[in-house]
Each structure stands twice: as structure tokens, then as C-alpha cells.
Amino acid sequence: MIALFILFVVLASPPAGAWPQKPSSELKIVDVLFEDYNGDLSPHWQMRAGEEVSLSFRVEGFGRLLLESQDGPRQERVNLHYQIELGDPLGVLVTPQGQGAVETTLGPEDAEWRPKINWSARVPFSAPGGNYRVRIRLSDRIANRESVKEVSFGVRAEPVPDSNHLQVVQLEYSSSEAGP
Image 1 (spheres, rainbow, N blue to C red):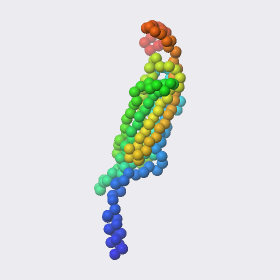
Image 2 (image 1 turned 120 degrees about the vertical axis):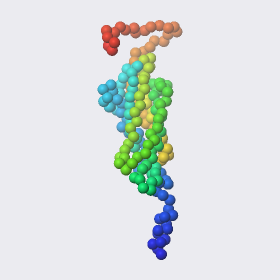
Image 3 (image 1 turned 90 degrees about the horizontal axis):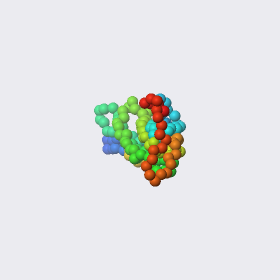
């Protein structure tokens, strides 16, 4: 009789995939690294105005939704969305806000998987010098959590004089196509 009761309770309980799996730690943006011209990675970056800034980051502590499967291997769904803003030293947006998503299905071999997100933007030639701010906002749609991270980098630039008319400044000649 007790065995039948236990069997009834087990059969009547909802399937394991009915609820999202809560992550074991908080949602974090980690390993934010800038990429230099040789492909080397560093947490610090300095560049000249007119060049491109490239960075990558990883995500930890995200939720996984267990998908129901009767005969196949265990699969989990991941649903992350991010927004990236690049601001100049005065806080003015340099480029339009970048956004994207990581929506994928993971298998048993992906237990240690952490998404890596790459982003880049060009800083205009006319941009002022100073410390620029990259703000990353991450949203986990399964665990219903958010995380924000800010990093900064330096931009070297020549000051552009104010003028009330069109003028040419700092005209330079080059001895080769790629040279100074």
C-alpha cells in the first residue's frame, strides 16, 4: 500500500523541466578584456582617436531552463540579452547603443560553458581625449536577473580648436599609404 502511494506521488509530480533551474551564483560579467592590434588581450587599453576599440567578456551565474525530453539527452536553454554603451569623458554617447542576445541550447557536455561576447566600436577622429566609459548591461531572461559592469579606457587626441567657419587644421603629408 505504501509503495503504491509513493508510486502515485512520483507519477503525479510535474516533470523536472517545468521550472527553470536557478543558477548557483549571482549573474556576473567577468573577464572583460580589450583586444590590441596583434590580438593580445588586456584589462587596460589606450588608443588614438579615430581607431577601433574591441573588447570581449564572459558571463557566469546565468539561469538554465531544463527542456523536457523523454528519450534524448538532457538539454538546457539559455536566454541572455545585453546592451553596450560607449560614452566619452563627458558622458555623451559616442556610438549608438549596441545590443545582442545569446539564446542557445546546451547539452550534457556543456556543463562548464560560459558565453563569450565580442563587441567593437570606432571612436571618431574628432573625439576629445580622455577616459572613455563602456557600460555593459546584461539581462538573464530565465533567472530574471540583471547585471551591470563599467570599464574605461584612454583615448589620446589632439584638441580641435573652436571655429565659427570651415577651416583645415593639422594638414600632414605621408611618405607611404600606411605611413605617418
